[in-house]
Each structure stands twice: as C-alpha cells, then as structure tokens.
Image (tube, rainbow, N blue to C red; front, side, top):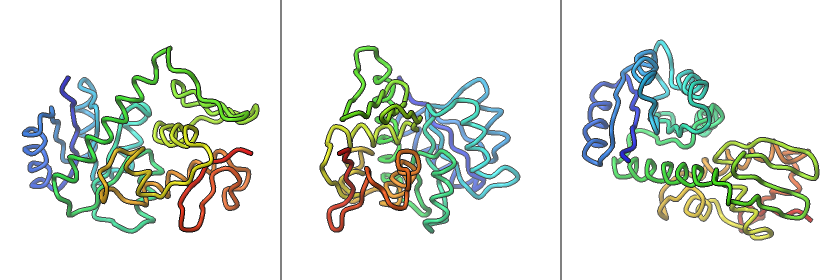
Length: 234
C-alpha cells in the first residue's frame, strides 16, 4: 500500500521540490503552503505521515502539529522541517508531538531515510496491536505495547509511541548501556552516522519525567559516563 505524505511549507519552491522527489520515491503526496489549507485538504484524505515546516503564518507548524494530533491521534507520524537548529527549538517541536526533525538545508536522501525509518516504526506499532503480542515484564514493571501503558509497581503512565519503542528496547536489554547513536540505529532505524542525538536526549528526558520520581536524579533510566543510557529496575 502506498503511503500518503503531507508536505506543508510556505517556501513554495521547496514544497514543490519535495513533492516531485517523494512522488519519484513512490509516495502519494499532498502539498499545502499553509496550515489551514493542509487541514482542509486532509479532512477526507488523512495522511500516513506529515512533513511540517515550523516557521509559517498564520498557523505555524507547532499549531498545525497539535491540530493534526487532535484529529488523528498519536498514530500519525510527524517530522518537522526547520531552519532552527538550536536544541531549544528542537525540544519544543518534539514536545509538541513530533517523531523526528530535519534541519534545513538537508539532502533529500537523508530526508527519505528519515521517512522510511518513521514509517517502519509505525508499521511495528500497528503489529503491536495484535493480540498475540504479550506485555513485557521486568521485575514489577509491565509494558503493554498495544496500549502504550507502562505499569510501575501499581502506578501506571501512558507513553507516546516513540517512548514505547524506546522502553521496549530497554526492557529487552535490561541492565545494558547504549550510546545515543546505537539507540538511533536500533530503535529509530537510522543508518550509522545519520539522525541527531538530540532526538534521543529529548525522548529520554520525557521518559524520565514520566517514570522517575526525580527526573534530575534518575534511578531507573540513568546516564553512565562514556557508556550511554541504561534502564535498570533493582
């Protein structure tokens, strides 16, 4: 089945280049040059993935992200296209529900690789709804990938799909440490040398806010000097 990609960017030339490139790559493409048009065009044709520029008017990419999330929920993968390469801007975008970000200027093969990686994760998440998939259990922690629910000794939190993917990986590798680049390859599906460590840092930070009593002094999801991140429930 051909994936439908929504491209929203007020740089008309860039949006048209992305349209042509994605069509050649085999995607069904919807292009809009502003957020309101994007919402109108996708009302009857919901996209399978959205590429959103952040700096647009009158509705910016962050507002559009929230509107699309309200309509399609967490199941819609969103990648931000932005010229803002500072970590604070990236954090804001990811906190709004984006799955990934690509900073301008970018090479089209890199963007296409990011799209493939996100769509692969979404395909896995759809498979995770199958009844045969069992919850993961580590000590008195239980994660149900079908519902994105993590139960920690009787206390439950709901994770995002990306956070769920990361926790599935950590629970399968309990007590082992992994670098940000290793996680990008194994969890996000990127090739070595691609993807930004900020994506991992922000996801780890958001997870800690949900599973730690003190996110600044994590007990379960720790950072180990020169080794990376490790999940451990003693």
